[in-house]
Image 1 (cartoon, helix red, strand yellow):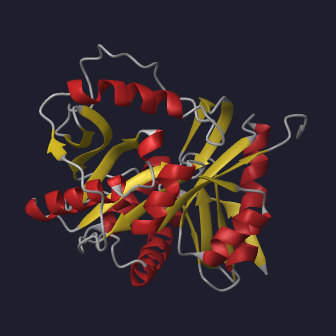
Image 2: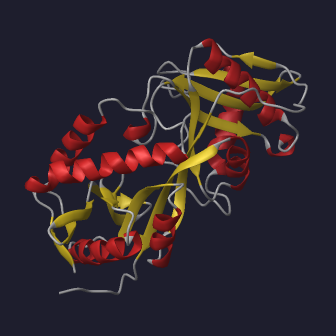
Image 3: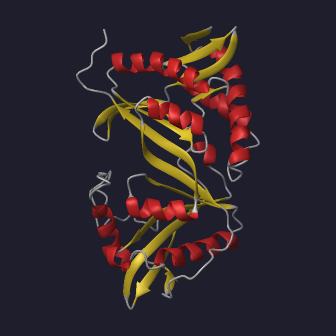
Length: 316
């Protein structure tokens, strides 16, 4: 019989062991995931930091078979009060009866979240875990973002024959950046940028050890990629061998002409020259043009999923 209990400090070691085994299994399906030699200590420490948050543990015959913890909350995420279980480490279960275990854990934790006034819930899951993805789909979740990786094998096939330059100033792409900013609220993306566009922002795209490669038509910049070494959206994907694509955009009339492919080829060379192991990118799942491009040349490794509950609901 499956028993759901409140998560306690005493469960951290067993939960850590469960997640580490799961992560190592994920690496067999997604070999580009970082190896993380210190993963036991990292996960144990991460769970210790959130152990006082709402959370549940699933037991089968006194054996821990699953857990689910809140990582944080936000008062206004995408205009909604939202409870999160993200970062990947914050939930896990054994493979046997995984869907049932997650159903029962979410049943308990979601009740707490709704009582606390959080009617929007967000999780991150490994993209290759089809069982878990479908379990959340059945529970009413839909994708909002994805994180993808690719190796540094050369980009094959014909690319657009356009000049590509590494920039030492943001001036050539200022208009492109502004167009990029105002692209996000358009359909079907409907994403509101966190900050208003400011062409005089001193903390621009070239700050923070970021390199920018731009494609040109004559003197006009028509597309760009910005890149930096290390980091990822999910800390478990953070690695000094990552080459992270921090931004990318092409003018509408220049899309689907091989220009993005030419820029990606240049970025692969940049990663090779910097002795990196992989490229990483994160994006919005409803971004048709960007998302289709990333899916063509990268492999998804993490999905962010979200559920919005009817705001008329009330749990006493």
